[in-house]
Length: 325
Image 1 (cartoon, rainbow, N blue to C red):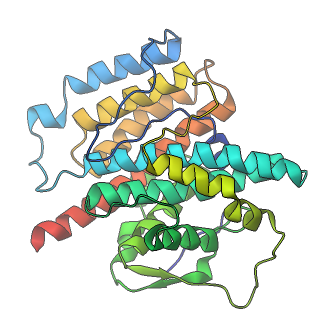
Image 2 (image 1 turned 90 degrees about the vertical axis):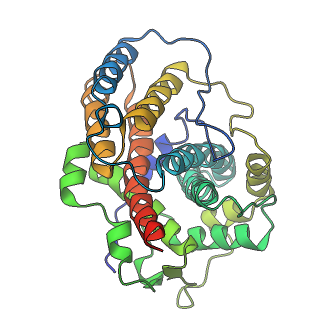
């Protein structure tokens, strides 16, 4: 199976500042901020939502409803990835500062935290019985270890560790070129979404992520230090207990509002993966051209939008298979 080994450190680091919230099938995708944001970017996105929701496929019934509603699962995915990434980035930055590499530490921590916790929240939303209450549970340890093995210190993917067990898994992991183009997302963003789908395929026993016996882990490597830190496991435990990953940090009202609006239009407009790509494309027209957000903030939004795109592709195909059973 072909998996691109692109470096996406800058974008992952940006994920540590994005302001998502998490949801599962017990809770809806909620806004983190109750106070309105009044920036131009918010006004433009509100206009997009208003225009789209007056012609929503769900309203005009452009396509028949899916037998299984996968949109809430996508929401769980996106927001769960944010919470884990933000928490992991903060911890990674702290551990990295001890090594003299706070930026690299934040990149690694956000990658481990975002992919690990985001994948779990998505999978749990799909299979509610898969409840995990501790980071030391065998199931969660397996998720953590698979993620650690997949991600190199430079942010690239350990492609040679992936063994496909399902002949159709490539279609679930990959997003076709037309949808990539429609989304307007850059390649680095798309790579993040792809890594996420690789983890979902692993959780669903469609691929196996193995160890790397040929390259023993360096005991003092930054990735190993972050992975083995008590802070990281405490962070997972706080998230598993219902925390929001925002401990000790203020929120960014504008970014919170951006993602709240995206959440709204995703839930009320989309019925197909094409719709998700279309929404993202409309949002990217605003995000790329606004002066209200810094480049890091823009990349943070792109991180979440890419996860939504890939998650929609994966879970829409899974829902079709479930409906056929």
